[in-house]
Length: 230
Image 1 (cartoon, one colour):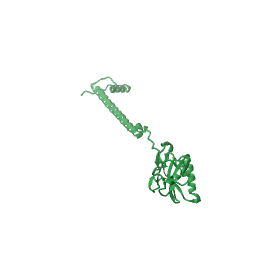
Image 2: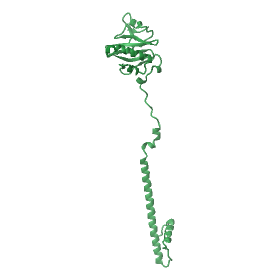
Image 3: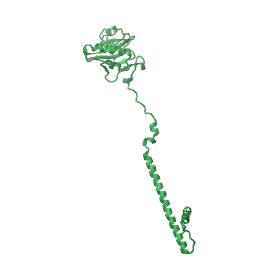
Image 4: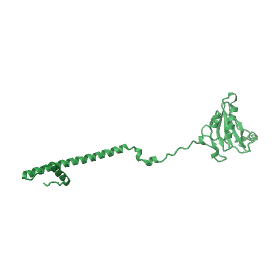
């Protein structure tokens, strides 16, 4: 049976023989067989060692590759998922509503049950109130609370930029519409029921009033409910 040639390993074996001074004159066939057997043994040993080295190197590479994958956080390989900046939620309408951002004549209903104002700080916290409206309502609240009364003002709706619908509570109660009379805020109507149209006109208000605002509907001379007209 012919031997599988291993040129590199055979050269390595010859080098070992030379270094060990093991190459001797071929004086007999027995000596030739002994040397051949010795070479085959060394070759096999070298081949086994080489195979083991390759196998161990390959196994170590696999382990390193697996460990390196484990060491990488999941987010490190998903740049596209983290590159986008999440959209921020829009500020609430109630907190950011402003009369300056809405067209003149726009009627806005305050969300929920309305806004209760118990102090000047409460009035100043309402972002959509103009500075002149805040100043007026702070004075209005103080007048209702004279003598320690537990009154509060309620805001339910407004029309840009001249009307506010609300009322007072905690010390009785009534519905009110406040209006901006050429830069000065006043009560247009304060009542617990549908007012007379003559009462609304007596305030001096010369514009329309939304139907849902106090005074927006009133009783005419025949005591019929009609839309207010100046």
